[in-house]
Image (cartoon, rainbow, N blue to C red; front, side, top):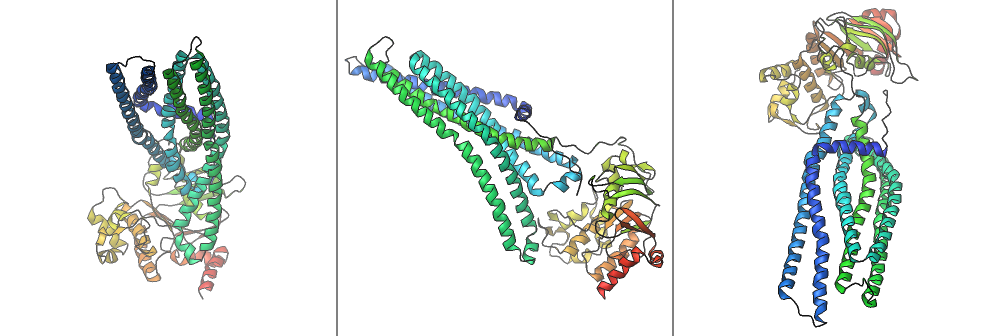
Length: 595
């Protein structure tokens, strides 16, 4: 558990402001795209006007008016060129938008999130599943990229087209234009009301999506455990429940967003009927301001053309609600409190390895105190073992020493230097670590060992492998040190993975070492060999050993018995056995379990 800080909440206005700020670096590209969109709009509304003129020329043939072949042919050619140019510019808009969003916007957000990840405290990772974070950095960022499409296509392009069409309609006939003016705001108002309701539905969906991501990631990574305990049906049931919740939330969000387009289509069809009635009346009435057949065709085409931008705006409003939810989740991470910079970034311990805890207090939760007035001094070169029951505070001591968490009060010093004033990277560079939970990346065995030291030579890597007693098994592999460890590290055993991490620590050759039951995943024979070589490695180095098997720390200089965050006993193995106290009970219980 950890101290979980509440994520900052964003209003819609704040989210829009942040998105606009993020769009500034690509403003020039958006302007260019907007200009292309304006040209596309001009061509799209020009085409019905040309068709209206052509219709009038054909209609007048019935009245005995001679057809101007040259003009007719010129209008047909102009219409064809206009349609081709409009299509070409529309395709160009798509290309510009795709390049802008994927290369400059989406990529930029993911790089910022990845960079942020390196500066977040450990508590964030304790409280956020891998699947949840992947959902934000992948799914949410991808959905945010639609924002640009919405702004350009739905609003800039759509609104320009509506304004241009309405102006043309008023020049043709005021009454038909007024009829359309009545239905346009009606469509937009209804769409806005529905879009507002869909925002909460999209928030619920994104939460369900993050939970689904997390479950799938955990289920996949724990596949062997599920098989070993025959929990397939249980996991299947959980998967169904989570997926069903996800399906319901998505269906509701999609339904509310999808409801807008049919409403637009319905109001548009009503407008279409009214225009036909009004246009027909003026065409046959012969009153002043009457419409020609060509103008009626032009009006109908423009009225139908207005449906496109209306539907686009309606879609954009629904999409924006989804985007705002995704954006707020991304910005919550980007705005999270980072590890504070060091007061004295160039502060470096002398290197002797003397460590002291002075009146240290710490708790993961204010309701449950853990480390209370912890005082202890480790002299240079001492091997300190931390033992005690699970949850007693052993790992917490190491976490505080490495500043994975900052203490609530008190002081921890290395060679007299207060660690709270040191740069965390400098502090952690003083330590080498071998943890019980091994971590290898997808790459060769050589690369995984060399990870312990930047610029390590091949001779140094091989020497470290020899110290860890893994050189023989590596050299017997078909590809030797160039053997590739797959992504899940399933082509090496647990013991071999542990040995590789130990070799990595040997190569790092740090002044102080932290060992979290580093031999727990190897067989007894290998454990004895590693224990001997590690004892040699620890000579002259300050080391902290979290021990579960007490047989591995009988030669420790000091053994700290920790329970409920307090040192209940301390001394050497022999001294503690003589006390016949808490340590003796733990020691005897292990041997009773083995007998």
